[in-house]
Image (cartoon, rainbow, N blue to C red; front, side):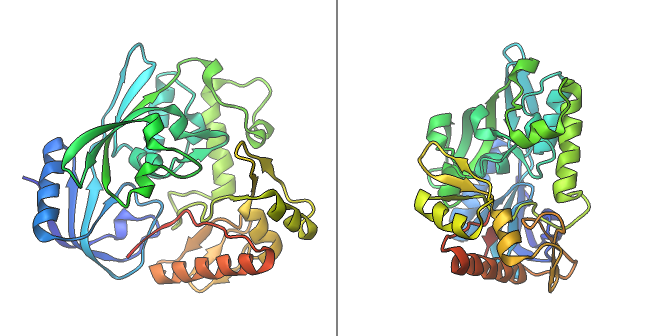
Length: 335
């Protein structure tokens, strides 16, 4: 029978180390666990939140009056001549990338050092250096907390888009159980198209060195995420209309941009924060901005969820005032 803990500290379950507590807390691993959790939620009539690695969440209050469901299942299985892989939702994403490299499979190397679990990566369609995990998905096995049934979602049904998916849109209805990815085993299947990645890598690329190179790139950009209190990037890059872009160019003529297939233009939000707000290296209460990357916020041991929320809200308001666009936070706030 699944163990339900009461008044559980969540400090070690979020990368900000916010000292919040949950009324109820449990870890799920088997299909039976999922069914028992459904019965508990229905009986107690309580709210719940599904927690992966805690790398992209902020607990707003000192106490969460509901159930935190922590994913514990973490097995990895290669099959079909090593071209496909079945991963349980609780696997740490970076452990998966490392595991594949040991098997001489390199086409997930772009996702090196991204914090959190595979389920969290699927939830937010995590990506880096030209690759999003949704591109590799064959199907996702989920537990529907509304119907108490397991369901399979194809890649198309998952509705992946930039840092988004059906799971993010469904208000925690679906508990991701297993993920099935289409992976490669040859050097040709590596994704090295991202411009900045090419700038760092040598012309003659040794596939065994790609993960190491990306680790160094991310450390330079974000710092060592294992040693600091952060979620990495706070904001998504902004997708704007051509008209909005032309207005911004009048203020920031050198702003980088990318044309998107949907007719919109993507611009780096970090560039906006740096050039318009000049926040690099500055400190706001218990939060400090990375001196090299305006998207990365660090926190002290005393930071609260409300302090993070208020700073993000203030920055969004200031950007709106200066260039009349809305920027979107990657952080999930849990009330």
